[in-house]
Image 1 (cartoon, rainbow, N blue to C red):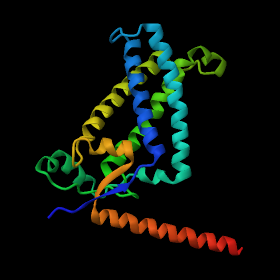
Image 2 (image 1 turned 30 degrees about the vertical axis):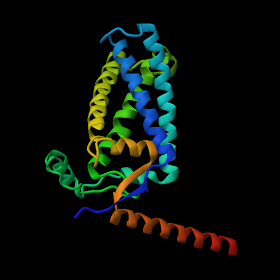
Image 3 (image 1 turned 120 degrees about the horizontal axis):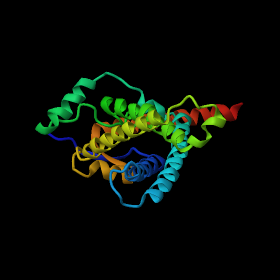
Image 4 (image 1 turned 45 degrees about the horizontal axis):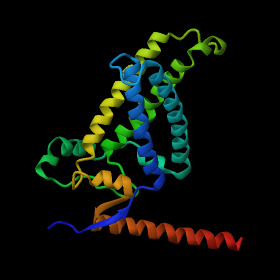
Length: 229
């Protein structure tokens, strides 16, 4: 017997804004970056370079704001890697999902990402994106290397790393787009990232409400104690 689905608010406005902003920025960077490297001609070399540089700097600033938000809100805990049920989740996506099995790690407010997603997002945010941003910034600031004492760097190596990581990010995007279709409907995950609301099974939704009620009670107690002081 299937569980009744209950709409639950999972993703904040900022989380959704950051997700779609990053999607747009990555799309523009890939489009202009591959043109700069001669894969095709669409905007023209000079225009592609200017747009690529401006978008890259925007992405760098937005990413720093995102990191600040993660650590000031405690949301960094959502990305702590775990091996618990990792193999089970991998089997689900490789085999069980095609049989109609239930997801072994349903989303919760305190655990929005399953073990496989945590590893993937952590690898992206802690490795691929920083490397891409650093190499891109170094590439952009090449004329300042001498003044900064960075003459020991090799521009060709920096450029090679930058393009290799770009292909890795492109692969991640392709897989990510596919994964958005694996909800209980093909567009469920996309709608969630637009509205912030996710359809969860009733038991899961009730558990989230319990956690929220506990937090509200704790905040009220802390407020009373603070007033007493």
